[in-house]
Length: 106
Image (cartoon, rainbow, N blue to C red; front, side, top):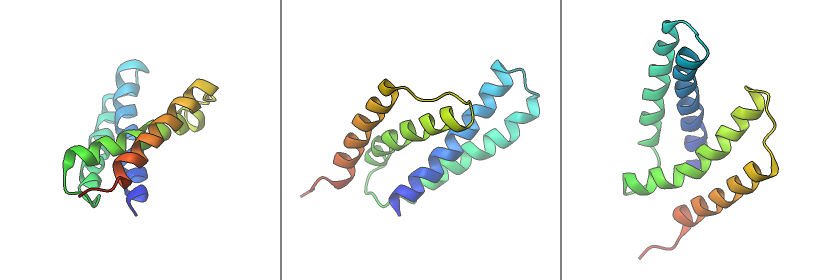
């Protein structure tokens, strides 16, 4: 369930940030900011459902998921295929995410 929450949060965060990118860099209309702000609020709200005792650990583990989701966005939305360095970096980050999420804590 944690990965589903993280994946949904990543989709909303990337979509929200892309709305700002579109407005400022792609000359999209200012109304693009409205769904962008809603998406960013949903992103923050979703992260509160991750079963963790601390916000910092939740956000740190989310980082790897965000990176992978960003590369999927790059590929599917921006029509740019991630290269071997993108993929290698994402795999390293996912290892870090797994360590943070699944490390035995006492």
